[in-house]
Image (cartoon, helix red, strand yellow):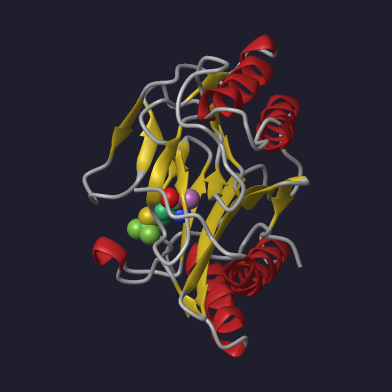
Length: 249
Ligand code: MF3
Ligand code: CO
């Protein structure tokens, strides 16, 4: 069931999303060689709590942390640890959510630790740009397939592959609501986009194969070929005036 949000609900969501965006910013600013992913997680948790919000991911299906921090060939759902030290050249994807007034803001971004390879930079830049291509396509009267088509065309034209096993999603009082928002699709197909819909668009883009596998920790998703992956996500609202990004400060 797709829940359309009233303007009042959208302004509450905006506050949750603002906190999520700030937490992602401070977490990203902390990414540098020598820092552990556990330290970054606690920076994010403290920011969220200081702003009166709750880390959405913590205890979600038993998840043990505030953020997912996924390095290099890790695509999503990497579990932060005080033993995991970030190295120069690492590509570090951070995904986190904040719940405020009962509404969820969900966002992610990929950060460079020190100097990264030109191909890592190109992958990360392309993934970020593809998120904005997807957002541009999220207009009332359009269809879900328009979003995924825009993202996949942008990335595949540049030689990258789109992860198909995980998708974006509706978001509201729950982190995961209908509809599912794949990063691939056919224009004009799928659920109709309507004003009041709030969705998380989150391209997960790989340098090599699109195939992924889950690690034995039960969470971490890696590329099957061990090549790099990047991930960017915004929570947005579909409005009569076009898509509005909610996860900004
Ligand atoms: N942020 C992820 C998403 O965008 C979900 C994280 S799973 C969790 O859908 F268990 F870590 F919360
Ligand atoms: Co999400």
